[in-house]
Length: 199
Image (cartoon, rainbow, N blue to C red; front, side, top):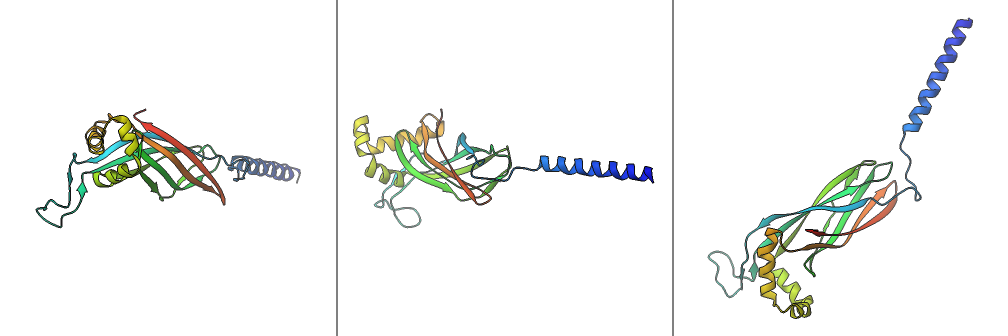
């Protein structure tokens, strides 16, 4: 009987220790006090697609299709690191930023793809930004006229410079006004970021 009592006592202690160890290994629950916004940084930028520099006005008759004002496309891919410093998983719900060539904001892009970032880990997200000569021309004419005059250049010369030199990574491309929305157990945090490539 005494032997059985010792075995039961030892077994109870073992179970209690195992339960305490299990609780100690459990991740902390998200609270407003311990929820830190993840860190978003630009890892790299890639020229995904480039088709040279060209522009046709709608006065030019195409070989096929209808004439229109159309220019060369340019597709850039921005690869971001998203680091979760929290002791629990966090969901990224959206990411948004403006792309500038040199000092000229040209396009605001966003990603609504959600992803979970594990506790203490870093994920990567790739966001494509599409440009074309026509839309960039309109943007420059509306917002960049004075800056172009200050630089001693014109809209066509500036566009040609970008479309021929960005594929060679010789023009600075900036990520401005970046923001990413993160959620954990009903709580929300917004991380802001900016970057340049090349640095």
